[in-house]
Length: 206
Image (cartoon, rainbow, N blue to C red; front, side, top):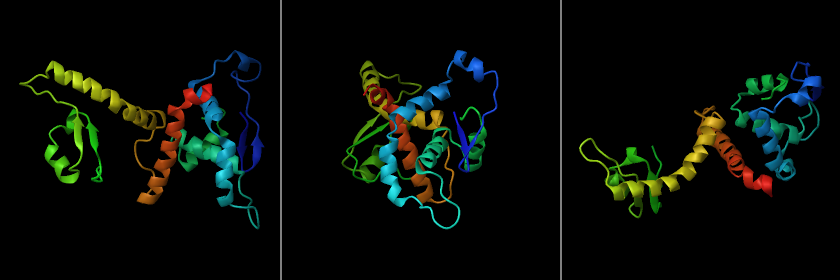
């Protein structure tokens, strides 16, 4: 990979993993992930949408190329890097209490949210409660309740997989900025990238 900093290409120091030995090295999971993302991300279309709003060259320091900056921006989210952390990575040879709005028709939750029927009826009266059944010390779940829980889990897992990628793959466990607007913008961008990861198999086959 060619490393670029301040518009200048930097040479990468050779190690045993480069040069003559590089062809024998197995790609790391990170490198494989980046190669897949490079394939599935529509860079040209994204740049075309962003270009009208991107800073133009003029007096003063020229802006970094749009596609290069977009790739850096995505890398920050994929590997949960701060601005200083991203700058360091550019030198690295191995680059690295309100959930309801009232209009819901169905609510899904694990057993920790069981017993909230009164709250649901007050906040979202039209909703159907699909929370997992919860066993107690003195009462085990019936066969029917366990069967219903399995069915509910199949639905909930589609959402849980998103948060698995968000938290475990991207390392997004807490907000980075002060203020709702900045954090919302970051979260929207990260979730869009999560969608690409979730759909990468279909996109790579297309």
